[in-house]
Length: 89
Figure 1: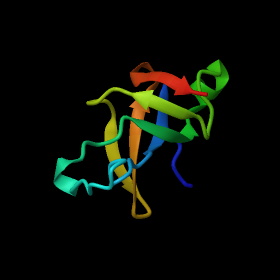
Figure 2 (figure 1 turned 120 degrees about the horizontal axis):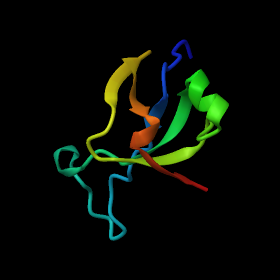
Figure 3 (figure 1 turned 45 degrees about the vertical axis):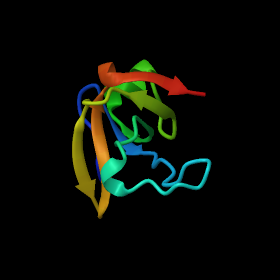
Figure 4 (figure 1 turned 180 degrees about the vertical axis):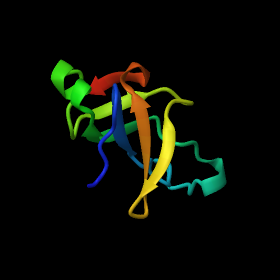
């Protein structure tokens, strides 16, 4: 990937939620909310030095956090580390 976040930022790829419920009901796209968790794909040098998160960590973030960007046809989210609520182990 040719993207390097700057400052205290990380690049996150959202984890897609299932499109059906446990009982088999299909959820239409317009009724789904955007996922609030994702996988870290790139981190800035400052974040790497502090050791807050690392690449491939699963993280949870705020609903209205970050800036959406598209790289190579994929959608990503650029977040500041203060918007990352936690790491899923």
